[in-house]
Image 1 (cartoon, helix red, strand yellow):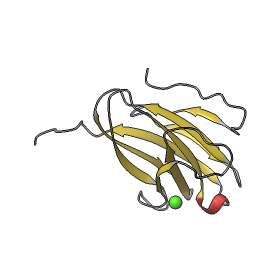
Image 2 (cartoon, protein in one colour):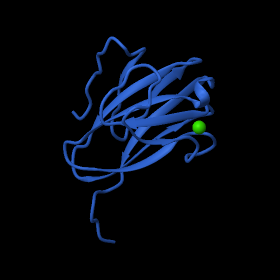
Image 3 (spheres, protein in one colour):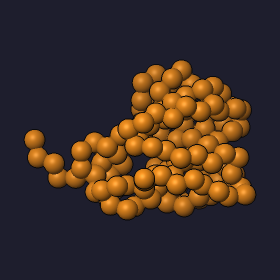
Image 4 (cartoon, protein in one colour):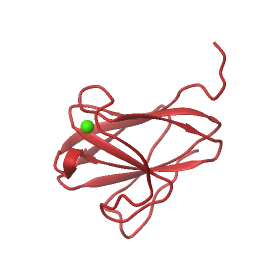
Length: 126
Ligand SMILES: [Ca+2]
């Protein structure tokens, strides 16, 4: 298994993210949901949501409290379908990344599905 439960007193929610499997969640106003993902091998991974909710994702190498962006590595708002975020990240085997998913501007709300997809690995020749 690549996914671990987050447990931290500062988190409103703690969630797992599973490769190639969509998880369903709901986001309330001002809400955020943390996910943790550890790459099972060197490769390129796409993190994205689906659904009608305007999602926004921020990526960190450590968890942070509240709404702070200190140490933020990447972020994305609308690169997916509609107003979904989508972000491709190259990761090394065993590398861990943390996602904070929320509604755009901290005000958008609604349900969404989230997935991480293995894009086939670094240096794949076609
Ligand atoms: Ca968005």
